[in-house]
Amino acid sequence: MKVFQIQDDWGFENLRLATRPDPKPGPGQVLLRMKAASLNYRDLVVPNRGYGSFTGTLPLIVLSDGVGEVIECGAGVGRVRIGDRVCPLFNQGWIGGEPSLERMTKTLGGPLDGTMAEYMVLPEEGVARVPEHLTDEQAATLPCAALTAWSALVTYGDLGPGSRVLVQGTGGVALFALQFAKLLGAHVTVISSSDEKIARARALGADAAINYSTTPEWYRATREITGGRGYDHIVELGGEKTLEQSLRCIRPGGTLSMIGVLSGGRLAAPLGLVVTRQVRLQGITVGHRDGFEAMTRAIAQHRLEPVVDRVFAFEELKEAMDYLKGGRHFGKICIRHR
Ligand SMILES: NC(=O)c1ccc[n+]([C@@H]2O[C@H](COP(=O)([O-])OP(=O)(O)OC[C@H]3O[C@@H](n4cnc5c(N)ncnc54)[C@H](OP(=O)(O)O)[C@@H]3O)[C@@H](O)[C@H]2O)c1
Image (cartoon, rainbow, N blue to C red; front, side):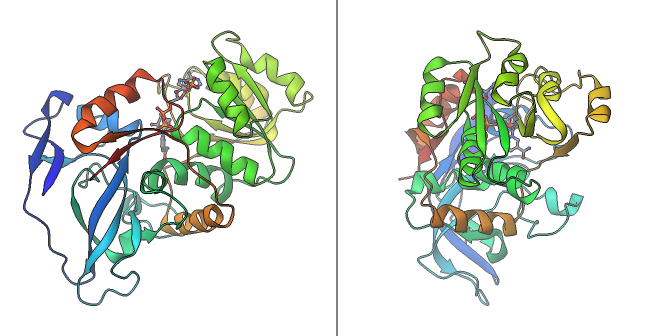
């Protein structure tokens, strides 16, 4: 089968189109014919052996997110059937419950082989069905970006109608956060570097928006939006350069979901604000299968459609990664496998 893998040594220059033997499912496993994949910011970090404790071995098939069709089941498989369209779960070991090291370290696209392969063999416990109304590319966006936003706002959040939410940027996680927060009846503010993207975010349901390039001290502009009360929940994707502003516009007792470190990963914020505002700083690492299944039920019920910016062919993975690096995208970048 055709794969895209980091070969021989770490580094983008070692990302290669290659072939591997077609896999066969053993007992309790399923064979997927992959249909589509999607890119996350993480996929730009893994080839350079990012993430402090990353201990993957090479060669490594890249990308975490995708969707495929079950074409063969090993002995004893009962959760899914041949013909089902399923997503491989990002956290293969986390079915539900509390996070633990064991549950959170078996992740696809590093250290485990990812979704840039024609076929994947996975334990039946490591896949979950996807809503029928989604295209393959839309379904491929769910395991990492969508579940992260869902975990922040639903599994570990407590949003309700009228809650005030702030979302940073218009990338993959951000637009899912916008869509889920609207589905829960919240009032959503989006900050973005582009007026054109702001117009598109408003069309998706954003109630308020601030251009953080032209208004660098954006937290001041939020006072009017929240009537001075502050946000109930902030989806923190910027990290180092945005955290301080987030702490200045969250309401006392609000939740700050720490998800991304797009502007740097060091702590450079007045911690006193966390204390005096009694802020809940909630780290998020994607989520578990129970969360994924709750999310796909909600997506199916509301016929929610993930935002796909652009689709590339399998062989165009490097072009897709360059496009992601360029930051012009709005929502998700996908790969069509065939
Ligand atoms: N913890 C987890 O489980 C988890 C899961 C998924 C992703 N993440 C992390 O979350 C972050 C976003 O991932 P993604 O895949 O959604 O990325 P993405 O699709 O590449 O989104 C990037 C967008 O973020 C916005 N942005 C960049 N710098 C910003 C800043 N300083 N302030 C505000 N917005 C900024 C930009 O939006 P505009 O162009 O509109 O300005 C940019 O287009 C990454 O750090 C990623 O590693 C974490």
